[in-house]
Amino acid sequence: MSDVSAVKALVFDVFGTVVDWRTSLIADFTRWSKTRGIKADWTALVDGWRAVYAASMDEVRKHPERGYMILDTLHRQSLEKLVAQLGISGLTEADLQYLTRGWHRLHPWPDSVAGLARLKTKYIIAPLSNGNVALLTNMAKFAGLPWDLVLSAELFEHYKPDPETYLGAAKLLGLAPEQVMMVAAHNQDLKAAQKLGLKTAFVVRPTEYGPLQKYDLEATGDWDIVAKDFGGIADRMGC
Image 1: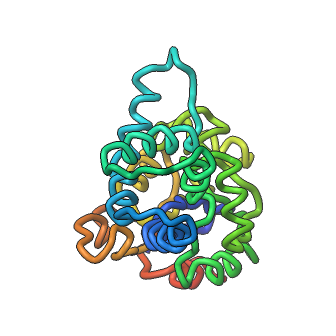
Image 2: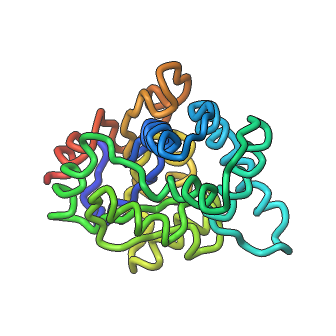
């Protein structure tokens, strides 16, 4: 078993690890669209939106001369393209804002809040997400996530898996990398964190991408903790 006795803080990937973005957005938009009389394939929109997530952040990396853009801005740009591609008509500016801010209104997985509350009794807990500060703060209020502080890619003007995010989080916490544990449902996120000296915990979220999910169904690295939920991580961390 890995030695995690030096860990003082746990930082969490959020989309897919802490919250169920796909189910939340589809249900939200389906319910909302009925009040607006708008018909659309919201499942196709949500899946398409997430599919261009990584590429939108890559554009920021490729063009530093344009300056850093927060995830809300990237989400809005991607949304406008998808609405056109899917032929969704009749959307006002207020509608586009509502849809974009859907990412602020995501529901947690059933074990998330209770598991975080247990870990909070002994450790500093915070998101370490590509979401911007306002998004993560609003989400925490909406979903009841008991963070001690909000750590966002926006603070470092770098998106994960850039090293600046993981090392920046440790620096802001006044900790060495090995005193920080990255928790994620994504092996690639943990691989990047581990390479920089952070401890790692993998939690399985087999339906993040829906019933036909093909990725991250099991741990593919030598992570310090592998658990089925946040309760399992709390058990391992002595909470």
